[in-house]
Length: 551
Image 1: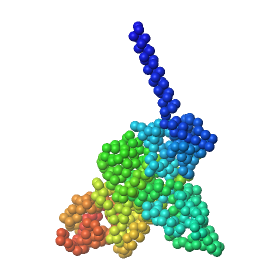
Image 2: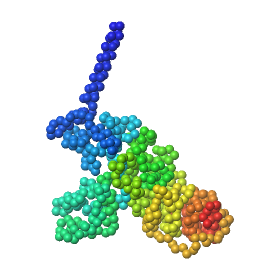
Image 3: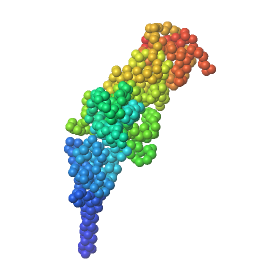
Image 4: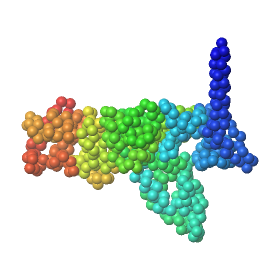
């Protein structure tokens, strides 16, 4: 009995000690309490208490402000530790939108690791500082973004034309200069969101003509149409998130939409990417990912070597410099598209999701970069892809000299069944004017127009049996038995043979394609004989005789 009393006493003391330790830890040793204890205002110390931002419309309850006190409502004057620093000026008020809306993480946690989402199995870790702009994609979908080269040219034009002498953009420019030049004009950092006067150029010309001196006379010369177009691109891209727009321009130059859909637009060979930034790190393997196990590192390594990260992937490595790999990872992280009540859905997102406005610009360079460059190369001169051989060099002058606009248009519309080339007349595909923009672009780049063909589409009358013999002995090595394709493209393709004229096939065989394995058969080489015109006609007749070939 006495032993039991001692045991009860010891256990009671132990429980009291544990409760005392827990109380001390909770009320004095919590990190957020230590941080708040350093907080001061002009009136003295701030109250140490649990703080939070609650916004039912956004579905958030963020306690991040228990540490980052100066981001809580009415606490901006607090000072103290390095964590008690006010949020830099942004489009949205953090005291209303909270922290996790943009930065992700676990809003209701009060311990650093848990709050930052670094706890095991938390599916939404906080975005790191280099990728903080990816959070804008939770709500926004910037529209009309051009491909990378135009985007960079537009930025360079704004600097080259000295627009910063009067206008402030992303913290630069817009101040009176020591020589008396410049002035404080409108801040254009958010022109793409807030809008701007479409007739600005005419008004600027009037001001310049009326001025007798000063910056209006010295810093505003007449502009060419090309420069005005570059400035339009620049102004439209000012959404207070320059790194994200830069990353999106890289995405639209890398051909990703050829295989993947974003906002319902793009190819169907790869997975949908609209919400790729929400991928749960607990559902992927970091075994072959160097560095810290973050989704940013996983995405970057996936762009470098897809098959080493996702077993069986047919996606080719993205052939861009390392800096652009990081930008692609930033853009992929931004594809979050959280669901919000209508009052919080921004205009740009409504334009894309409900009215079908494009996220990309409508010019040929952007369309080609976004949809075609992944297979055909950024220069249009083709790429060798795993599992499907080489993709054609559609910017090859020899091809463009023989291919009519109608032939190219039908190829884009109907694709190549059995190959990676999809039909782009479909839901989520290309619009007619976008296809024409691509055709105009490749012709402009090659500087070649299609030759006039006075002959009818079908005029060859050669011997198909002789053509089969020639094809099997000379052509099948590249184009495969019965034209099924190999190193060279498949020729028993109904869509190809339906669109191609006999002249196109004849001249392609005779002339060949420079800078490709397809040499012309009008002349012989050390490894193969030349073919006469009747023999080439026989080969074309054989191609036309294949089952399902175009007649």
